[in-house]
Image (cartoon, rainbow, N blue to C red; front, side, top):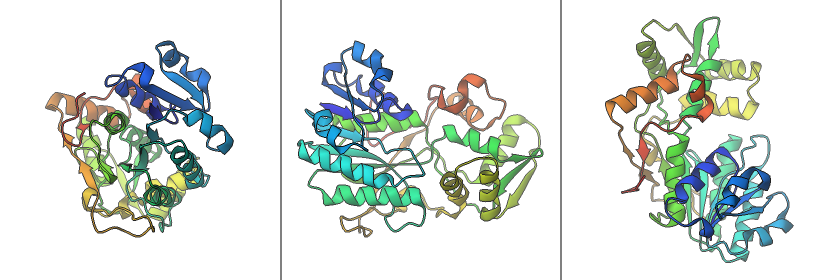
Length: 322
């Protein structure tokens, strides 16, 4: 069965929606800590089971029958997520899963100082050390979160942005879900780490320029050090690890994501580089709609927090049907 963990989350649900366009509902297994939230999927024939990585004893029965699996990374920045992921990988191996896809992140490195990058790096190392073919989908930062970052960067009518001009290749959550569904279904079957990126790299300075162009008025910007920016985000309530990750965006190499390296089973960088899932650019109308939704603080409330439908920038590796 085609199996998705974290199936009641934002990304997990989107993956299943796209997966159901490729395989019958009876072939899909949705795993979650909250099965009651997936009653709608159960009603159309998807198998829904309780699974909790924090309870390893629950996993053999939950994983029974799984053949290809997407492990959606746990989203708590305050815990050692790699331990939970390792438990899931071991349980998947025990029931004979043939392929594991994992939602990783760009910059994954077991030696990283950032907790998030380290967790993803250690998980990739655990996958590489297993006997299971695997794909690490190194998703770039979600574009839906950019509007929230802009909103939280405002102070007294001025945008506070960290110094630096490194670019981030923002990608929509739905695009990531489409890629994950294609890999899970076996439509495309890359091995090892693969970057999942958006169509355009933007620095914080580029974001400010785009915002000014879309709003038709000047946007005051004050550049501060990364340390000051992180302190500002933490002061308004952003969890420390998340604030550090956002504030560190300008420290990321401005080279395209494909220039980064994967992880060998021993945790060291491998010689081959991760491939990038190349974007198909949307039409100008779609692009302007998408950019307005991402960068304009006055965007319609129904488009906030990733609730909108993707307007374009379908990220693919080869031809992935939508």
